[in-house]
Image (cartoon, rainbow over all chains, first blue to last red; front, side, top):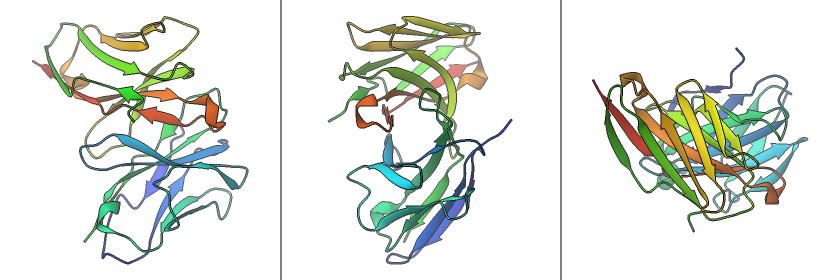
Length: 113
Length: 114
């Protein structure tokens, strides 16, 4: 069964460093999302992406964040200058059609020191 | 502003009994609801869904009930099994944004005791 994959599974970085989180959505999916979950808190929407552009972003998704679909298969989330409070699990999700269910990847655990 | 609430952070149930997980929401425009199951350090796994035009959806041991007037949904697991122990999130789809993002509740940790 097709699934959303994410790499790396874990990343540790120093505050102020740039990180890139990678996702490979299910191949025929058209809508892509990033969510995050800070430890012990709920899953929060960050950004949605469709037709090669951001369709919606939350207030969390400030200028330090960017997304890209560089090659038609990968979907990346970049954090330019990480802060301690960026430490969280980051989940990528995709769906084929708006009327269908979002499928989530296994997540990347980011720890900013 | 918590639009989706799961007021019980945890629930313990004996194996074989029914587990009932509850979720309340505030926005009557939400049109689709999902329950996800999540194990530690893993991504949410889709469990069952319900459209706002229905009041019940059943899939094996899992049944979701929707009460639109009360803005309440519940997930019933019968019979509960130890492997069901996980955190359960309800999520509501918000169509007003155009991107149909999901808004999650805070989760309920279910522990099924053998």
